[in-house]
Image (cartoon, rainbow, N blue to C red; front, side, top):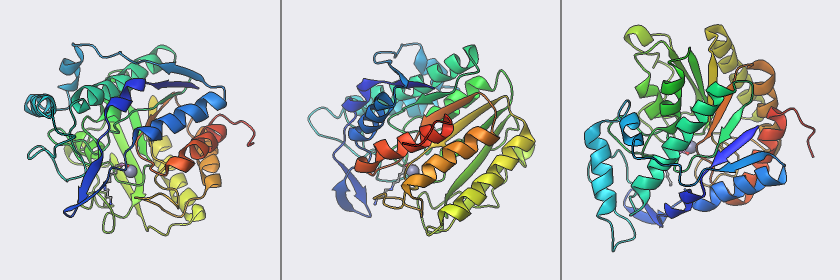
Length: 325
Ligand code: OKP
Ligand code: ZN
């Protein structure tokens, strides 16, 4: 497995977010990706730092899924932060968890470009799986709005590119429902979106992720949500995962993209289903065994800094069919 990241992500480093008006420490820390990089290095995986990959032409590419006004607003507003640590934008935003710093726009662009570059490499050599450590994450970003630490929808941009080549399935196993990804492909049948997540009745993003959201128009039947209670045990989680896998195999995609979040871990500070360290090994193993497609794994959430390295190692060990250590 090839692992791609950009050490530039560290420049996006807001200190606070706001939760119902209270100022709290920002959970989406640079250390998250650093811990996963370290774990991949210890495992001896092929690791490439694509720092500086950003090209000027890339904004054109983002316009296929995000509106020009939105991109321009992010650019302008990020540029105006200057003497403050961060600001919370007033418009084009769905919550107060998504601050802008001076470098947020360029780092978010680079995160998206990394995902698109990973998709390009997957197409070139479609036998090898790629793990792309995007930061900031992307699955909550919609055409015209940032939300939940996300600015541009990394996985959706990668999926859209690959869809030129054949059908794409997206499996989202972050704790939170990927409202942005769902919305972008809701009326399309060439990209299937399947998501396992905490029941939105009780968890962010609250407004979507229910099981009756099945797609619209041509996309009817190509969106599949599996909401789970927050106390879901590993056993029940794996059962739901098998259900998701069946739907994907029935679809027969050319490519598989996975939104991977480690915030389903029982001790995650902002998420947390009942999954243990060992469950990630099993998830990796099951995905490898039952989904035989060129696969792009895109990092989304996971906030237990002390555990992320171990969880990533377990997932990759299972996915690569290695022996657990
Ligand atoms: C992003 B991703 C903290 C609430 C934080 C925002 C969640 C964003 C999750 N008390 N809510 O899907 O991991
Ligand atoms: Zn999440």
